[in-house]
Image (cartoon, rainbow, N blue to C red; front, side, top):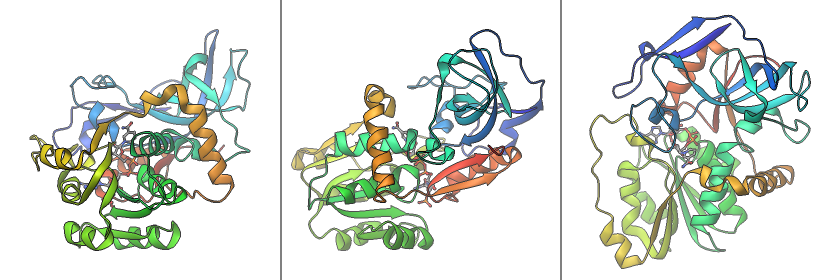
Amino acid sequence: QKQIKLVKRPVGTPVEEDFEFSQVPIGEPAEGEVLVRTNYISVDPYLRGRMNDVKSYVPPFELNSVISSGVVAQVVESKSPHFKENDIVTGMLGWQEYSVAKESVIRKIDTTLAPASAYLSVLGMTGLTAYFGLLDIGQPKDGETVVVSGAAGAVGSTVGQIAKIKGAHVVGIAGSDEKINYLIDELGFDAAINYKTEDVKTALYKACPNGIDVYYENVGGPIGDAVLPLLNKFARIPVCGAISAYNNEKADIGRRVQGYLIKTSALMKGFTVGDYAPRFKEGTEALAGWVQEGKLQYEETITDGFDHTIDAFLDLFKGANLGKAIVKVSEI
Ligand code: NDP
């Protein structure tokens, strides 16, 4: 079987040479373990941070070891009483075609509720990130204005739709006209701004006549800066991500935020989805409910074939994905 290792710490934007495919034997499960065949791999912007040798909320990947992320897989052989052959499971597993997993690191998923890949998107980590960041920190109220960046991605597209469910005026910021049309025509956003072709600050003034009550931050950089002058009194800013800076070799210095926060009494709060682990069940149930009621749509950009996993990861930084970026490794 094939697996993918990190062999160099990327400098700036990662390149193919930072990774290595190798061929290794398929492992044998011991007591309390299962052998699974990988069906889907989640590629995520946060993995870029784990490729640096710096302390963060998740430890860095070790050089010359297999990269891991969210995976959906099917049980091939079980030596655990909790799993049987053909069960579909999810967990943080390696970028390889087969894995031997301890029973404690995987959980069964219900594919009658949603297709298996949805457990890496709307019902998985990115859906939960949108749900808790927006509702716990953003707390949008009926009639308020919510702006979200990275709006056509996995987290952003879910944030905007939940904000609509809560009755907000929703404005998305994304990087192509195709994405802008998708946000307005398919997801019902009130307005959307193409940050590559429009002046974001001017476009925001137009799209947010009543100012901004919630800014859900996914990208940082000049887009995050453009939002600050429009904040309303008691605005909330869930700081979820800053993808525009992940490949920077030097610190990203932008606008100073203090003055804006003081004069608006705004709340700017960082978080990681793991902060909400005790409430994941509540989040997953709410998200699944909205999906079933047809109130929450989700898109997945599925790249076919394990050999294209690195391409799918690198594509995140080029904005190639609409909705969640996922690699399909094998048929269920
Ligand atoms: P997305 O599906 O949004 O994919 C990344 C998108 O980011 C791209 O499609 C691209 O869209 C946009 N992008 C890439 N480079 C830039 C840039 N320089 N400036 C502006 N936009 C850019 O990924 P996710 O939904 O998985 O993640 C969104 C954000 O949320 C990330 O910052 C991620 O790190 C963060 N995150 C945080 C979590 C937490 O626990 N705090 C958990 C999960 C995600 P476009 O075409 O619009 O440029």
